Image (cartoon, rainbow, N blue to C red):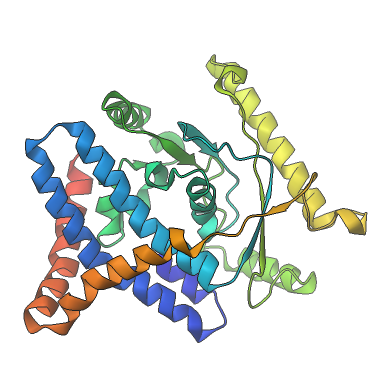
Length: 311
């Protein structure tokens, strides 16, 4: 998932973030695994507190590259609550990197460690991370008739029963990219190039954020489906206006005032230095390099077994 982001860029300077984000994986997973073993003799609550801290550290490093390193300007429409709260985050799914938008919002609410994803089943094959996301409370689901509602409910209930804070991210639309449809892809790219949607870098990210109180959401399944459908109709109209508005002044912006939201280096750089400090000792010694390589190989293999056997 991370490496695929690099494939679609035009500059070699984006190999550095990919190398760091992937290269720190063994040290990160080893550190988390050590804490997981230690936590077996203590109550579950302290484990989840540290688990969220570990996750926040890694994702803060990811945000360093996606925001500070790239110099991207984030414009947010809507008010993000300052206090932490349990969140169900529903979003459109336009590209591979949509998940980072959830991180951008969560870190601004000081809830980055609480982020957990509902993921498509194929992502469980990611080396190391496929297993780790499951351990952090991620839920792998299959589409359409293969969707196992019972397994998903069980996983979510196990998280709520242990009192783990939740910033649950769901993309109801699913993936918008299918490599088995090359003509659709080429036509889409041709259209994007014609309309100047493609560029070497993305200097600005517009995020339209609307908070809906739980009391406003229908509980009955049939009404909830209709409510969700209506929310995505609103979303589609916003996107259509954003890209195709006949009024030039309304194009490439959402309704309301877009506020710049710079991310402080204090929230991201320490994580980069910390994970780099864990990784370098492994790479600078012969023993460390062997452990590093074995973690990639055996950790990936064991993780694949675990995530495919466990419920």
